[in-house]
Length: 235
Image 1 (tube, rainbow, N blue to C red):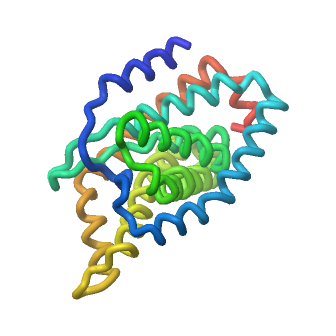
Image 2: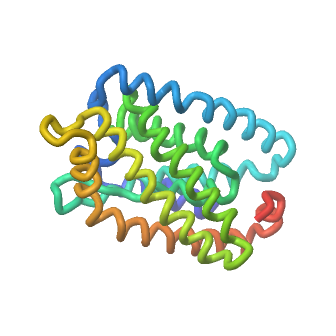
């Protein structure tokens, strides 16, 4: 409970900038926005059933679910000014994906993105599907499978790489979404993709490293104080 209050307090201390890699409201063409909603919907529905099953079978995990949501909200709201004049930020998605899996984090990530759009003007409602797909789905899937592939060899390295790569692939996916929507008129999709990737590369790689290290520390703390709950999740 002490950590939850700390994270909620940080929400009100985070500076707000006008543009970040949450795609802003109205930025995508309507057809593209709709397509990303449709692609995200199956993951969200499966996630609802997954959370319902988790709470029913393991009600003691409710607080850990809430903590993961707060962690994701705060970390992904911490926007850092980029040298390009825009902003970058961590995603916070790796922690929950490691503990609860990608489908649960699809729902939690969507809720986080919705609240950020409504309360902080980060992202938007029309672009919620696209932002959900990049951060809550692709980021979660990458983090989950990286962790599951490596944790038996070295847990801390697995956690770091899961959070690090989950963060980076979120931004690769967002750049892909923007490049598809706005291909360069002269050089086409590839040139546009390279342009969007380069906008955030300078700040995002260091942020992904920091997120990986923070996630390792948080996982270690949870192991220290809530080891039984993590064992229930097979970690």
